[in-house]
Image (cartoon, rainbow over all chains, first blue to last red; front, side, top):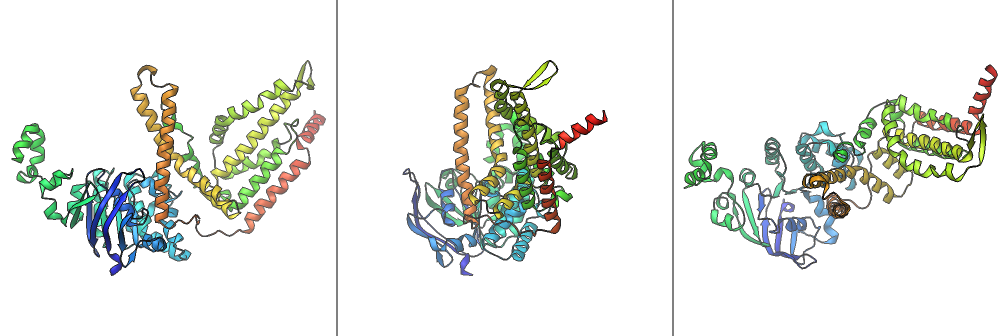
Amino acid sequence: MSHHIVEVKELKFSYPDGTPALNGVNFRITHGESVALVGANGAGKSTLLLHLNGYLTPQAGSVRIGDIPITKSTLKQVRQTVGMVFQDPDDQLFMPRVYDDVAFGPTNLGLPPDEVKQRTMNALALVGAVHLKDRPPYKLSGGEKRAVSIATVLSMSPAILVMDEPTSNLDPKARRQLMSLLAEFDHTKIIATHDMDMVLDLCSRVIILRGGEVVADGAAKDILNNRELLDSSGLEKPFRLQEAVWKNPSGFRDARYAGIKGIEELRN
Amino acid sequence: MGSIDSSFFDIGRLDALSSKDSPVHRIDPRLKVLTTLYFIAIAISFDKYDPAGPVPLLVYPMTLMIIGEIPFSYIAKKLLIASPFVLSVALFNPILDRCPMLNLGPISVSGGLVSFASIMTKYVLTVSAVLALIACTGLDSICSALARMGVPKAFTIQLLFLYRYIFVLGEEAARMTRARALRSFGGKGLGMSVYSSMIGHLLLRTVDRAQRIHLAMLCRGFDGEIRHGEPSKIRLSDLLFLAGWCALFTLLRLYDFPAWLGKGLGRLL
């Protein structure tokens, strides 16, 4: 299905104060791909994400979602296709009840009440949050808020999921649950993150941004093992690929007890 | 120091109360709002030198509280918290209006004192009625009721968002207060200059957040209108609620029950 494609061509953008954020970004993501967008703070990840659902309009270049270029008249269609999950769930959950929040999108699409209800309940069931439907968002835990934020987007049946730091601020277990949830989705996924271990688990492709440009775009297993490339982009290898760990199965514990010097020795 | 963290308004409790189920909870929010508005109009229409006149009206908030299982102590506490504002308004009456109205033996009561009492009575009546209304309806239902009764959406949406984000804002303010307290040893740094810059900072953060929320709303098809779930239908019991209470309020306004009661008691004694 062609509407699952995201194509960005020569995208340029500077903020009103003149700060350049994107200097000619190019990539094409096809149906069902799971792509990690990584880069140091200030590399342009968030600015890029804001272009993918038409919140920012390109100053040069273009963004196409499937067969449609993003313009004012196609915004509604684009926003239904691209579901955007924000970094801070408190920004995403603005209605007084969880149910109202998940129903917000479908209601605005003008769907009949029965359909809205069905979609809302399905989305809540998909993220395992049906029992939360009558709760006010401020009473949820971090993991629950994140699950519900994803449901608010799923209820619009998007073809593409765009997520900004989905695992930030989660405890290890909630992070693990979220990752297994995301792994089940067959949507096209674009995930901006610093969590390199999640990238290793969830993404088959990695795009590295540095200074508003794409410096690497390729298979996750190649890029995540390229230490120089990651280093120069302000990133690190996923923990599980760091030598100290795989050389010695109990390397983590040993390294902790051996101190910093021990870690260096284990690495070399 | 923990005052902001621990007790900021305690609105969460109000919300929990509104999710109970009782006969008054089930009344259509629109009719509850109308009844309460009429109640307020009646309560404030009493003469300023008649502090006892509106007292029987207390039956309305009391009934809501009893049937809605809303603890009196909770509403009473809220009334106390807001009372300084009313006191500061009413306090000038006894000073400005010294004309004697009543003579109780050697003590003469000035008109100012009487109107002071009247303001306090009206305050307790109206505010407890509104608090009871919110506690047995929920602010979100009240907002959607107001919207459906034709109140401009700019107003209802603002109210809805104020209610949703007061918690987030409160938490943010509490975090800033805590950070300041932890680094201002022995009171230095707690002064006005730091305080004012903190308030400014909080405003900037709020503006940023507002932008992000607006973005989140746009992403899900917001077009300036918040559509509330399926509209509820007004039932006969709702209409009876409105009609019954309004009739009672009108009666209490037209006939001076406290005076009758006083006369009756006088005759008995």
